[in-house]
Length: 473
Image (cartoon, rainbow, N blue to C red; front, top):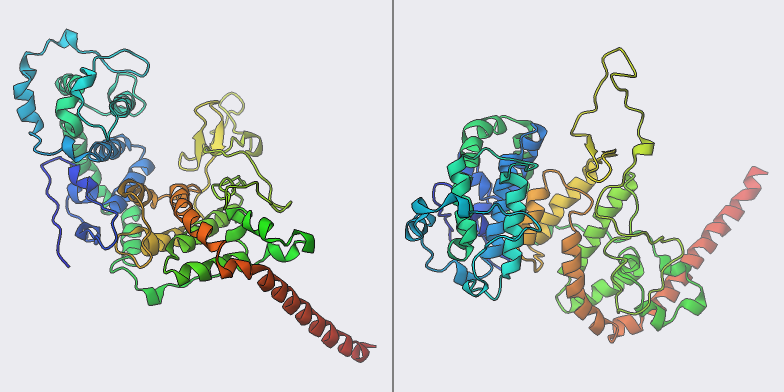
């Protein structure tokens, strides 16, 4: 396998965008090797995610968060290769734009909703990357990390802030290099202060343990799959068992019913295109493992996407709840937190890794940690479906892949939401052809046969039970 070497300048994170999404393409940097430099960690999404989790446990995540957000900004710019081709180094552009002679009073700090000079509209050459999106991302990063009242303010000298403002004003020239100089000090801090502690932390031990099961990638023979254990369709009354109703079931029902899922799986296997359906099923199981541990049931991605786009016949037991992207405010379920005024004794303050506060209300909200079985399943989905060149690799943008990898250190309920939307979108075409196939036309026969089989088994069990009754009289 041809090795792909990462090339980066002293602090450039542009190679953080090397991950590709095409079938058969593979990046050598995904192989886990005990890192010795901060650049190696930055250029590996999985390692970067564990570094970020470690920094958050130390309450000093602003530098690594800045690196991650700038990496996402670079990714968004590099979607258009014309913005990166034959690009001069930012220091050379500084010289050409007379940075040393810039009037500081002419520079305006960007804020959301504030009129700022970002250059003329016609100076932005890209038609793939909207200028408005770039401006929005720049303002977001500046507000969160650099401005005076930034929530996660990083330590930067006045000269670097002025230089960054100049580059923002001329973003059509600097494009993805706008924040390159601003990265110098945060990465220096990560290298000298954070990295030595990270390499001796429990987070790093977990990283090594997980990666030891990833590389080399598992083969097809190692893949094990468990079918759904129930079939709600068997409880449908006979008058509801029509091809019209079966065609209009939603994805949630299909993915949790072993008959409906099994027939669709046989069809996708017959056309050698089962990876999206298998990934959707495991993603649904991942969410169910969270719900089994007490995570509030929500109307997830599956319920909102109907197989055929028609009105959905949903089982009465499945309750639809409004979609929420934030954890619920459960202050009423939490014990009273004593304060200094209510008790003269020393009070125990809940640890910040278990308690956060709502930005809207300021009330404490409970943060659930990922169940161990759900975490194990998340890594399994990564190995078989997400990583490039995996045996069931699905079609996914490199940004979505990296988002998942960066979140594996602390996976949440919504980890695979974007994956689900992607695979369900791909499955729509397969489903349209499936409902015209013999596999679907024979579905009612399969259901009735299964009902008869279950009835026969029950009859045999009842007969055995009745034959044993005289022995106990």
